Figure (cartoon, rainbow, N blue to C red):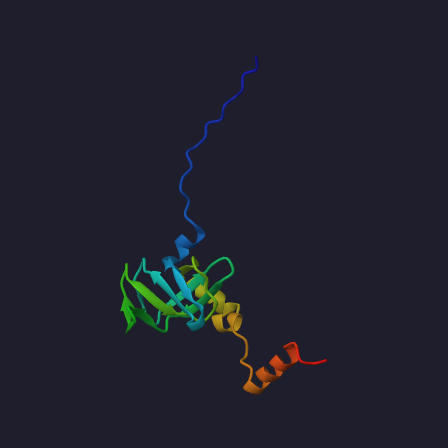
Length: 145
């Protein structure tokens, strides 16, 4: 009979996530309105117009300044914890993405890398003439024989 040494296991302690020490969670994207670029969330911390937020998800990660906040279709300058709000966003956001207030270090990192939401998520707008030409060239011609 072989005696085995048993190792004492330490109880697993809850470790803080990487974002919790640097960034505060503002909320979670509950719903997105893609056509008008608006998201809804319930706030976990107060938020006001002019604050910088970071929206981060599986395929999303950008910073943006809050331009407008609405509560029940009325524009407000600030919202308190627990309010259900709508925020206009500048890029593609998906349900369940997290919203943070970034630390100064994160903001500086984005600035240093010259990353902004407009550079990542938008492309130069085409003129109306260019758009029509693109459609004509790419659209299949069903009436040609």
